[in-house]
Amino acid sequence: YTYTVVERNRHAEGVTYDQSVYTVTVTVTDNGEGELVAVQAISKDGTNANTIAFENYDPQDAEVVIKGTKTLTGRDMAEGEFSFQLLDSEGEIAVASVTEAGEFEFPKMTYNKEGVYTYTVKEVLPLDSNNQPTAVVVEKGLTYDDTVHTVIVTIADDGTGKLVASYKVDGNDVAEADLPSAVSFENVYEPNATTAIVDAVNKALKLALNST
Image (cartoon, rainbow, N blue to C red; front, side, top):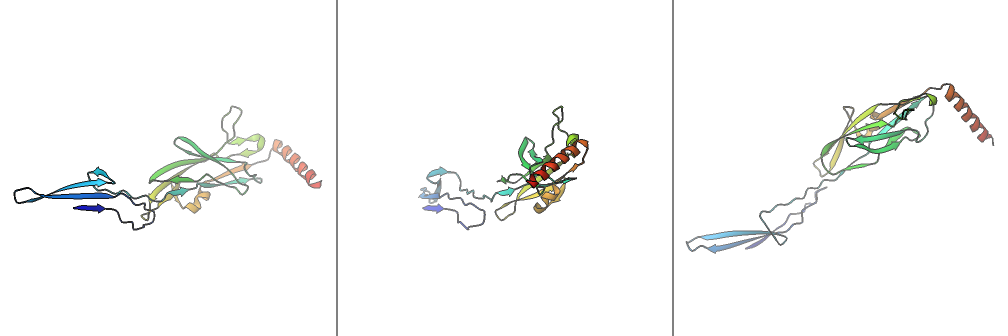
């Protein structure tokens, strides 16, 4: 007796079905003692197998884009003026620059399995005369934000064939739409004697260019 065993494809969302074909052969013989004895043999796609097993669950990947905002008090902010790092336990993953509107975002990350992923986001600080990061640049009148935000991304199966992400920022649950406001940085510009001269020169140049 020969039987074929296959998995029925029910077209469930996010599920990849196993296309394996198992053949089960049952040989029945008389043992000569008044009994019929059955011997079973299983093969999978033509190769001998011990059991029948199907593996088919493959949920849709989750995609995550970590975003943030930047404010600068004291003057307007230029596009690309400030940059930010995204890091994990092994180091830098990506760098993003601020837009003129004060927004930044890192490249999309894709996850194909459940898990908890921890990142930090911080502003790229300028270097001082000793080649060390510093939050205060007197000659530019700028004080940078040295905050380090911790972003925890939890990837879980939603039960419908999809992996989905949830977020914590600095220990607080945050909706995806609220990530930019949670991952925020603020710099301060305070004019001094040096910056006043630079500002005056820039203003004069701007006026000169506009008058030509």
